[in-house]
Image 1 (cartoon, rainbow, N blue to C red):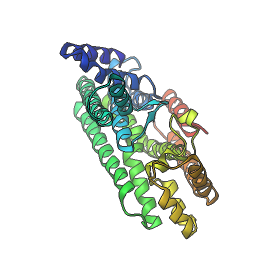
Image 2: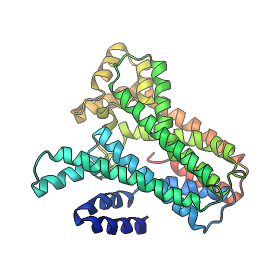
Image 3: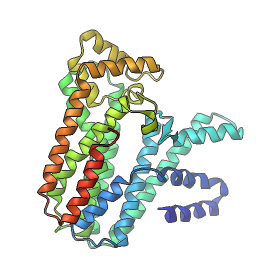
Length: 343
């Protein structure tokens, strides 16, 4: 990934030295992260008979990591997030650069514009790298089709997430729960866990990869992964998450945590929650008050119980997966790491 981005940095500088920050912003962002999608793709490849030292799955994994980076850049713009992994988000960093340079016009608009272009470039690079990797395998159509489906699902899920922040409150709690799971599944869970594992398998052998078994494991694991992330978005330690405590409340995220609360809180507490969601000026005291409400009503406990149940389903499916013990052990280690993250 570093070699690829160094090459593109040189290409940008050939156009103009002023263009290199586009690539440098991507390079800075991808230095961090868990490499979850890359590792899952590699295990999917191994489970379908792919060789451990084959460079093609590494190239494909780079495409997945760049896709993740593009999603993060755009997600931070949509959510107006100031930070990412403990550092300024890309649009905030560009805005700060504008102010420090003393340039004309609005620094915030410049920051957003530059970040959109950076995210677009990152998305295009992910497609280029993955397509080249897929074309070098024996099953480019299967790999490309899955990658295209993943990209479409993420865009649709992101839109539903944005829509849920602005629709009129008062949604039936049962309907809110279904909608929250739909957003969770398509915005994050499938592209974080399900698609990477499947893509690795399909690139190695589209006919021999145990995709049904992969999904029996990866679907519940991906949903547990995102439910935990939703809990961190409200209750997480900023030192661990790299974001302010309660950021999801300020952004108005209608997660399953919120959906459960709508059915558990008293009517006046529901009004308090609805009035607070999406308020960017929520104080730390107001966030603490909402945290107490969400915990005492049992909403947090319900989500934690669901994470545990999904984790057990995933691990049970892994036991039945027709792969060799090395692959099963590797996926088990990864699953346990995901299921206990930041607990």
